[in-house]
Each structure stands twice: as C-alpha cells, then as structure tokens.
Length: 266
DNA sequence: TTCCATGTTCCGCA
DNA sequence: TTGCGGAACATGGA
Image (cartoon, rainbow, N blue to C red; front, top):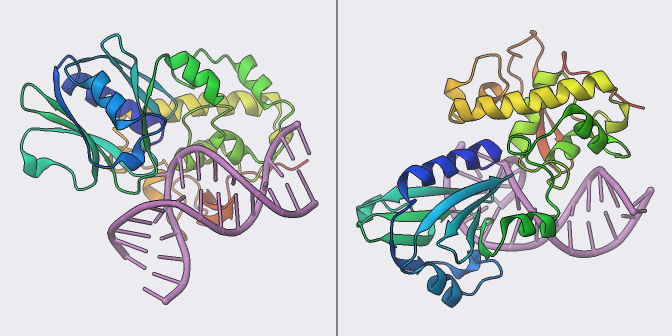
C-alpha cells in the first residue's frame, strides 16, 4: 500500500486522531521493526509526551514528540496506522502501540515487517543523511530542476521514478500509473526523453499523486481512465483499446498498455 | 507447492 | 561510476 499518497493519508489520519494526546504507555510488540533506536530510549522519549506536529517526506512519516525529537515511521509494503479504543479493534500485526490517556491507542501495523520505526533529532538532517531526493508535492520542483535531475542519468524511466534519491515517494504502483498517463513505456531510456516529454512527465507526476490523495487511494474512486483499477494482465486498456500487459522490469512487475505507451530508445 | 506482493538493500557484473 | 538483475528480508494469499 504505502507510497507517497498513502503516507500522506496516514499523516492526515494521525493529525486528526493522535495529535495532541498525552501518551500514557508505549508498547513495543516486535522490536525487530525498530531502526537505530533501543526500546528503552523510545519509551523514555515517548512516555508521558505528546505528538505535536507531523511531517512527511516521500514515504517517510515523522511525528514530533514534544521537543524531544521526531518519531519516524516507514511502512514497507504492508504498513498502516490504526487509532482505536477497544482491544478487539487492534489490527492483527501490530508492532508498536502508543496508548493515550484518553483510552485510545495508535497502532503501527506491519504484516511483512519490511517497515521501520526510528527516532531522529532533525528531519532535514535525516533526509540529507539518507540521500533522499525532493518530495514532488512538498518541495518546490520547477520544470527546470526536474529536467536537471534527469540529465546525466542512464537507465530506464521507471527505475528513475522509483529511485528515492532522485524523487522521494514514488513506488511501483504509481510509477506505472504516471507512465501510463504520460504515454511512456517504462523501459524507455531516460536519456531519450526530450524537454517537452520531461515537462509533461513532471506535470503528470504531480497530478497523479494529488489525485490519488483526493481519491483516498481507493481504486474504485479513480476515474475509469486510470490504469490502477485495471492493473491486470490481458484486460483492455481504458484509454485506447490496446491490451494491458504485465512485464518484468528491474525485478518487479510493470503493467503497460501495448499500444499507447511509446518506447523511447537511444 | 509455487508464485506473487505497493519497500529497501546488498552483491556481482557489465 | 552507474545501474541492472537477482537475491534477501518476513509473511501470507491465491
């Protein structure tokens, strides 16, 4: 689930539920998800504190704990948040729980344990240290800057979009959607994109990510012309009458229309 | 049983 | 040096 639009919705969810509530207990149900923080320190920082602000960069969500630093949540492939009161509402693969004085809890659920929870003192330092690229929605990203990001890059356009060091937040699903709407085959070579196509690609990136948030990342709400509700091998293309095909690229599945996505090679 | 899955990282190789 | 392909991580569904 969690690419940029999903994480943005997690942030809004956290804002309207867990923010400004006093934490009365911290339950670490699986310390395997902790990244560069020991359970004791996480408890000491969070216990008795309050989440006072949130930030997102790419697929990372940060929540400031008083003045003590930022809780960092990354969701891997299967992570999500759940705010609940009754124990029977606790999700099945809860790895971390913040319990609040009002009787509610915020669970971090991560079935496949590919996500991680950490504690950072400064968000911008973290972004810098990790070498994360700009966030296409949070950061100012003019067309010229984007075109520069693409210069001197080799490889395919899909792996570039998914490269978190170039742009932060796009994963397998949304790179497919963006390229489908731009009319570019994911195997196209970055160097083969002219200025006009680079401009169109950037506009599509922003539009697709914003729309996905607006539609609450629910494929049923997406316009029928989107790829997402039709991401199956062999079904008809909702745009042109071609066929949607599944191909393998860089070790993952990519879904493309065999008719309207042009493959640019040098 | 085998394949697949929205993430990241590491390794060998070109 | 950059990036590709594959494997690994952990878990579960079809």
